[in-house]
Image (tube, rainbow, N blue to C red; front, side, top):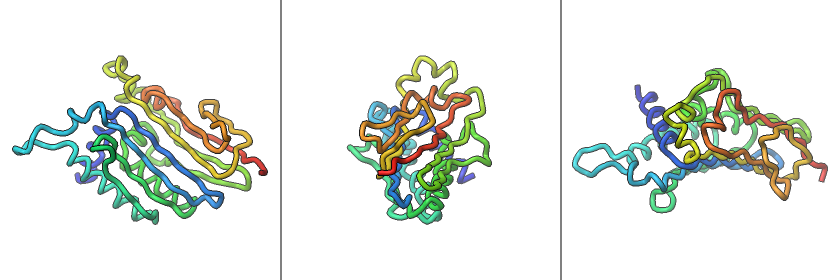
Length: 217
């Protein structure tokens, strides 16, 4: 029941937030760092709870839930796990460093389990993972298989543009080519970005899979 409570809270967090950004940086040896940020600035008043007279305070509940996700991440071998609020409790974040591909994949699985947004419409056996072979880099993200989520339901249709999601992959090397047309290559050719409203980004058949080939120099 404890885990279920955490997932429900995180689901509410994502469902009511305005902007979610997940950013990963990969060094040449595939160590790196990760950060997820959830901008709640437009809904701060709603999420802050009512008062201190015994009513539930949603922000405090999120703090506790994020701490549990951080504990799960620490078990995967990542380092420097940090979490909390920025900008006067308008941006919630969690960040960590990973030493190699194996550690990243374990951490990505832990994040996916703790976030309903990342797992709600995917096979329970599938996980976000990366592999690398020479100059080739693969980011595999399980395809979303269900038709509807809360983000593309009829009740959310008129509000979907208020809910944004962004995934950024940064590298130390320049990218020679990539194979996902939805991924936007940066001007310096060292990062790719997926972005849009959550309903479209997590619609049935969506995937963030990408195969990159790095330039020689």
